[in-house]
Length: 217
Length: 217
Image (cartoon, rainbow over all chains, first blue to last red; front, side, top):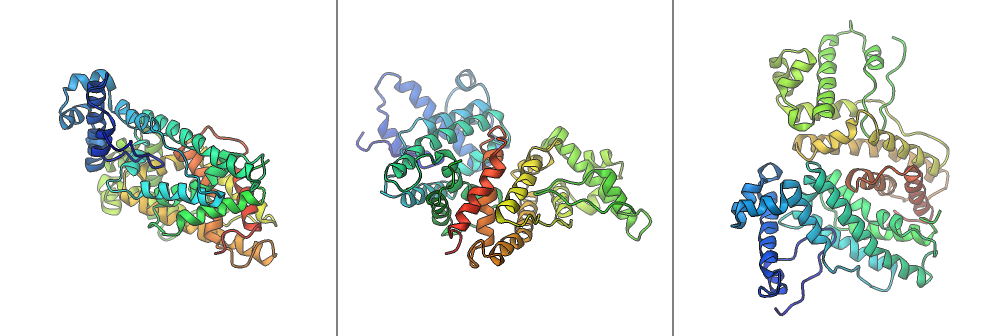
């Protein structure tokens, strides 16, 4: 038991199995079903990262998880269902954006989490983004995951407005997209070698824009 | 031979075959080879857009182009070579960023071209981006294509600095990424339904940041 479940970094990095296991008691009601789900979703992530989307099948995941294949077919149906559930699980955490006391600081902290997720080893986040180009279900689930994350981050924009740092009518989503999009563009699409200053610069450039009244019309 | 080759929109929309054909005289030296290349690359784009990456093979492209398969194997070797050459061809155009007289106007114009490319029918650009997650050669070629486009756009940042609109030490690439990344993030990764104001807003928000001294440290 011990430690609470660690917050999931933005966008979608699962907590390490040992700590996650400690957070879900085996004997509680639904424990067996939750245990199966955890093993299956761990197997999906491992299979995806180690062998790629083409090696992802219900049978391969069932074998890897040590779960009967009919159980997997019945509950998740196909690869799309498995990938979508990985993202549904990630959406179900208690992640909250950091509160550093300034808009700059909050955006830098969020961007550092995104940067960590995009450079993580194993590269689960990168593999899920790549999979979203193969599976419409994964693409939908990823979109919902991101919408949820940006919704949660809206509070950091509201705090900045309450402090009088930025205009009250600043559109939170537009500001958050401006702060984070350069990371995704550079690291996922342009595949630029990770630049150590990228998270800070993108965050501060967006904060500068917000201070100057951008994201308001 | 009539019309000059039309500029390629940003990021990678091929000109229509009829106009392109007019720009490359059939009788000039190398005309036959250029003609084969054009037919093969048209076939790559059509096959990719209509049937997806999984249906893309040297044989399928050769048949579609009406070119002998050994010609395609010898010159392009494999699917990665074919995709890379589609992007090399796109990089070889004479595209220049628009000159509207203001930074806002120039960035809006660039973003409108990106928006048009990402919503084009057939969706060649979207299909090439998706293919970059399957083929390392396509990913490399796409990166080189984008680097070239951002390099060409640096002149619009230099013009703004010369006019005194923004600090002379503004980093062109950072400003251009800030202006364009929200479009790619929303349309390619988040798959948000195209918002009519997105190109203008992202461009103007980045320009506001630049006017306020962002992108300089």
